[in-house]
Image 1 (cartoon, rainbow, N blue to C red):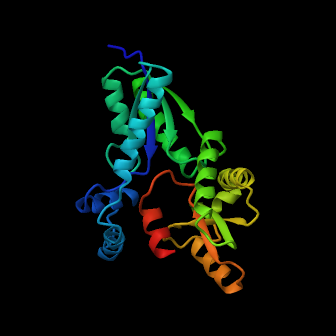
Image 2 (image 1 turned 90 degrees about the vertical axis):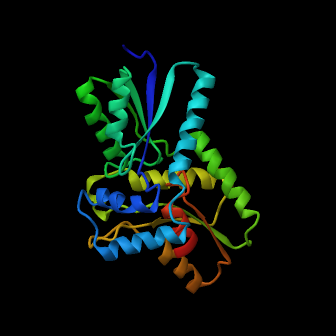
Image 3 (image 1 turned 30 degrees about the vertical axis):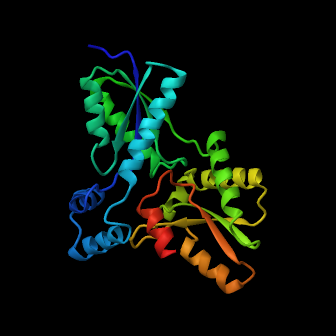
Length: 267
């Protein structure tokens, strides 16, 4: 039976739902290679520091429900929203197979990250297309929403509200997840898309003291995009003249390890 509705797949990185899920999650990130005991202990310790696991799974499900409700309001009965994850269940491929079983013939892919890079968002969309091809399922992609007005308005309102609680000499830093520096050689739009978001928010909020930093770089030997948020905060402290730092993590759409640990604890 063919399903006349259009599927919408919200795609994210995934997260372990319980401490027992950390090993398979980390192994999947490492392309099937289990981490060393030290690596596993270090990651487990990070999750323990934020309460044992990340709230990302429940936040992603809440976003799915919210999008389903929003689409139902504007186009009743036309869309069916599901989740598809990169490194944990429900995996993108599993979600596509389930849609095909239910008779869906068309799916719109949306990654829960606003800035496009072939090294990040592009990989999610490629996996969706590859999984859909055997089912002859039509795929449409939303590649970027870095300057979507509703997103800019949301971040602007948040920045304005937070600044009312900060000292006068506060610098606003807009961050996103770092990627390998080699993306510069490919004319990848990721860097310019983060800057576009920051410029739109800075203009809307009337900011004159702001900058960009990167965070959560991978633990590999190759160089990653910088400056790193930890270095920027130290430099601001050493230079003087700054009494507060407001970090707007515009590269993320929900609290998870990179926000709750990398920013709230480590930074």
